[in-house]
Length: 189
Image 1: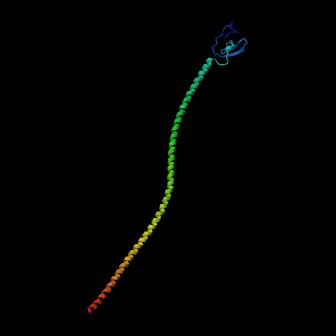
Image 2: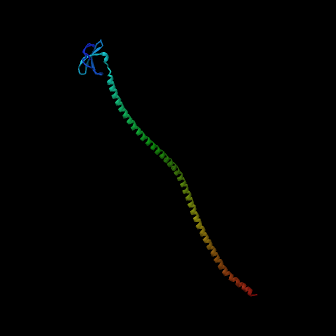
Image 3: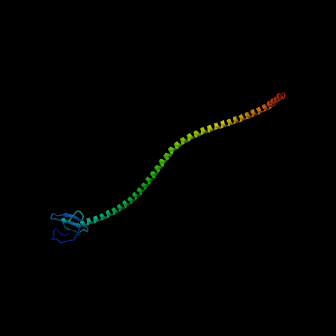
């Protein structure tokens, strides 16, 4: 920074690259009057002034941005790792749920088969009960008939025994008389 416009004026202050300045006026000769942050006024070649930050500031800003981006990247990496772990857990849960679903589907199919068999078994059981009732009825009928036949057989034997006894009595009464007559007829000869 010089005290006037041109190189013939003495240097008032050495400004570091990137120093912030307030532009007070611009002259067509190529110089601008500026004021520093600490209030020192002087003249600087306009071509050395820039509205954009200096390369050093840009570098520092870029480095800070890179550092913050690297921090964000590390956070994202941690997040990705966490999500990956969660994904692995979810995959294992999904696999176990699929296995459970397959097992339950198989059990459901078995229950359906059993239920359909139960209906068939119920029908068969009903038919067998009806047949059993018919057989029991037939058995009772046969027992009654058997008892009736036993009674008839006993009566028949009783009647046969009575007939034999009656015949024996008749013969016992008739035969001795027939002999007497025969004796009489034999003895007369």
